[in-house]
Length: 128
Image (tube, rainbow, N blue to C red; front, side):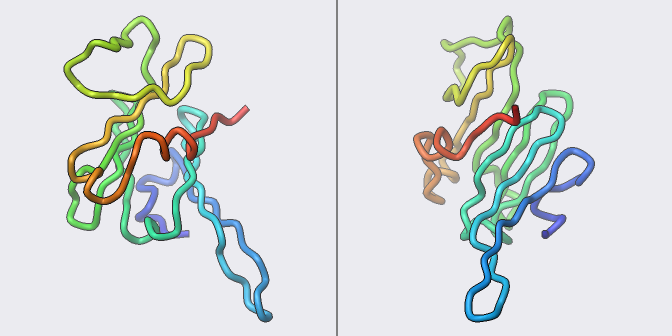
């Protein structure tokens, strides 16, 4: 696990699934787990050591940045009463549970990096 991928490890961690290939343990899948907001996000192997997470407790957001500290996308937990689909900020709802909306915002830099809302929808899951 690379601590720098997840930032402050008290808020989350990276989980690596491994297989034994030719007598060697090889990481095959990566997930980041947000302990505060109770969700997982699949972390493609090409993101490891290229995408880093910064926690913003005030907005209940994980910001995903590249090596140059440029924001690629964010995932936020938003109280339903504050969710505004008509906001000037383009967000995509990933999921809703109880009174919480989980949403992502992808920057132009993120789109250039290859991040798509449809992929984040597939990558996202709640811890039940």
